[in-house]
Image: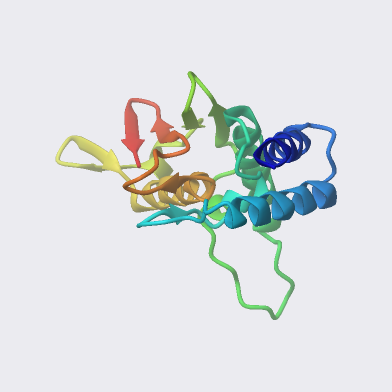
Length: 180
């Protein structure tokens, strides 16, 4: 019986991780896998936490798939909350990605196993930096943008005393790296 369950788990994981598996089929396979693992006593225990997007790529997604999803989320957020996205008479929505200057570019890289870097480039100096007494510091708007990117990225992560993080994430700004 244990061998049968192991084969089913292997097949479900392969189906979940296969790039040609549709979203509905992947979600169904993930639910089936969750039920099998729950019956086997593999329920989350302790102080485990899962990000709000963790389920979107499945438990067994590789780092490249997660990076692709982060890229998609950034692209969607820029398109959805771009200036002028609201209609006349509607309250203006505040979003750090949508409010950022349009020339800013975002790069999502996986420099090595279990690491995702989101780099913010082409930052206009007058928008991204505050100059006081000859010292340049990060502006509140740029800090808010970096925090928003970290939140998107960490939505795919997990943590707990009995498991490792899924990946180590960084938001990089030229000449400055913020680690979350």
